[in-house]
Image (cartoon, rainbow, N blue to C red; front, side, top):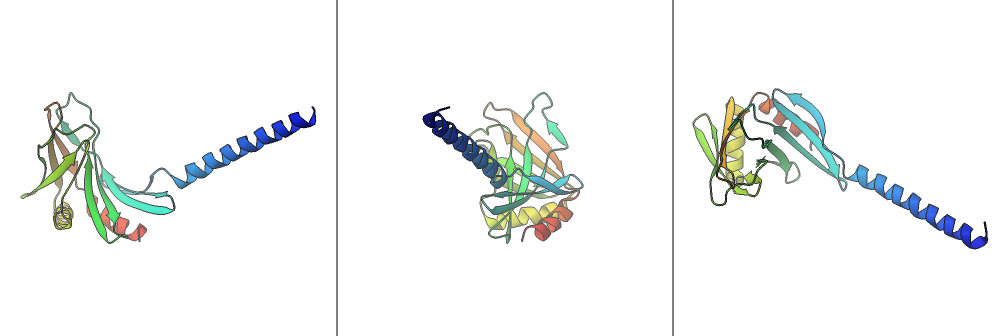
Length: 174
């Protein structure tokens, strides 16, 4: 091997090592959410992204209609504002029809969510706080939406474990 071949080999080796290290570094800085604990039908999750900690609780429906469709929704409550506020949101698993309501019913309370594409959320912090309090008092949450293809969906979420999950969320995400 002549000197030019050695330099070329050395350069290629350095590039491969650099790319491998960058890939490993990227994988560890953009971690996958890890389940910290489970309470009833709720999971407490945490992950680190660019050295920032993200904490939330999540649940999937225990019953869905219609039964001939598959959309895999999840309801989340994420810690925001430095851990001082709980932000509820919904990932529906399908695109919502524009300008149609997404509603949440818990006991005698009904909440309207704003929707865009596959996500829905409440507009004000006051509504978010009221929803979280209703979730703590209720036993079931029913979310209704309409897909872009005009399919009406109804998802039933158990609220078993939500209060304990929120307590754990406060403990692990400071």
